[in-house]
Image (cartoon, rainbow, N blue to C red; front, side, top):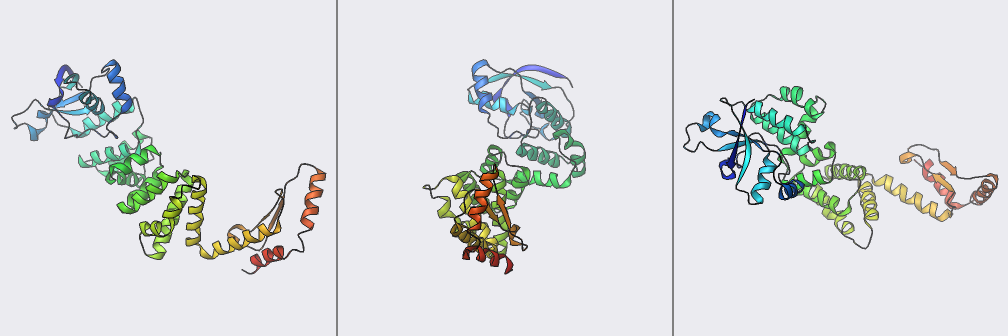
Length: 334
């Protein structure tokens, strides 16, 4: 591909129409600081708008489209720079896919894309008339993605998200499976879930579990996720007198109890009995997983024969305890 190099006025670059750009977010503070300190190191690549057949009849033919370098141009504009050196593609035919692919390869040479940029890329290709099968077969491997229709659909679903949600997905480095679930939500539901995540900052696994519980409870109670959050979670989430970790566990337990009320009741009874036994830390009595089964597990930690003997002696004193009998009956009553 041939280029010419010229000083171009930023006002002559069409920044409203971006047929080849998929960067998100568009403002990059590190890039801005770099250009502010040392100037523009790499000239953007632009394409004369008149190459597009729909623009040929327009009087103003000195406009350009950005092929690569949108963030650099926006940073220069914010710095008050009026003109900048650009590489101008010398092309007589409008081949949208060709220029998108050029932009893709240039960007991949120095960075990885976030999921929102992947969604923007797929949307550009789709709007350019590229069939879904071709995007999956040809372009997903460029991004080190499996050639999967499900992954394609999950990624492109992120395109319709509001800007705040997109920023949170990037900042929190949410995995695609969680982001795609949030993209399916009503805006009010999504905002409520993200507010919980913003306040509590749970780990990915905890957030995934909270989302799963919320979805299932909303389905069972035939209401919105926002309704569940307003009714049961707002006060505990906003209780700043309790640390975030404890509040997260409170939210988890509350949702688990709403989703599995019978299991929650059994767990409460079990924990009450365990507390009444006053067992030392090196002895644990563990119920069957989800109380499915009849066998209770006894776990004793020890470092030598003497500590084991003392632990067994202490446990022997609990054998006739009513609380221990209640534990056994709790499991066997199922």
